[in-house]
Length: 403
View 1 (cartoon, helix red, strand yellow):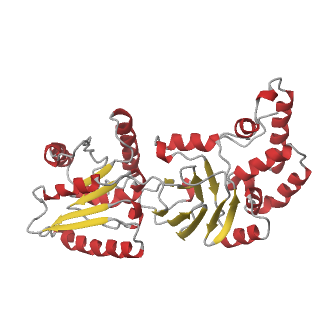
View 2: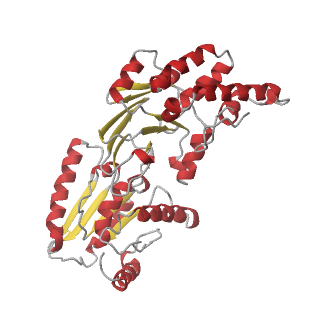
């Protein structure tokens, strides 16, 4: 915490030595040093970036199973477990806080992360012993309302103080009994002090998320329900074939109202993006649907038309809708097929802000290039739509680059 560097260094070296006493079976024991000397050392964004890279490194270099990564923290680190666990729940199989204090953290994000708390009965500093009992009750209430989630064990060790004489070691086999759920049926995402742009199969535009934002999403077969409880994040639902059948119709409802119905398009761009974000095979997605920001207005607009990928895109296009509808009506087959593909997969911001004449120019130039290509018969439609037709790659400028 706020202690001098030499004190923090000595405590860190002590945690390294404890590997011989904790003795995790068939595991790599890693004791990272906090990147900051501040009291909020486990909440600074640099900490999250460090842990992301550390997990990826252990997977690549030490052959660690991505579904068997566990977090255990002691004292000031125990404080960190309360903070880090909800931010990293989608990367962890289970977590443990030893002799820690939650401060202002929230357990909501632990829905799919088994969590255990250990504290000494006589550990009265910062009220750790009493706080553990309070959190035991909070977690029990959460589990009562959501029986499939919030697995937990809270153990107040009788007669022990801040040091529990290794009795807290029982947390290790308890954690190792669990494997990560990378694609859970229900997700509760609450943004902590260090905000994240993705969580399980949800994502959000980085510039739209703020501390305290809260999203709840669940899926039942091919139907997905999303509720934004707090904030106004621009939510993206990510999909892959391990979650549901992308060759069948998928329905997404926002606040109970349908905002998408149709077959989500698999794209190479989404696969590439999710691989770059996180080198995690179980967290690679092939399709994504950006949800409208203005829930009631967008939902009513969608309900007024035949709900499908293109209709849903038009409903989210704001003031650009009349011009886009005119462009669709004026575009002949097969160019219309390409235009519909772009509209169904464009980010909502592009639907609202990209000049319509630029979109039309892109479609015309792409098809004209295909028509002239001597090898055009060897280019199937999927390759053309995914790799040749798009007007930009990820963060590139939207400009007239084809002319």
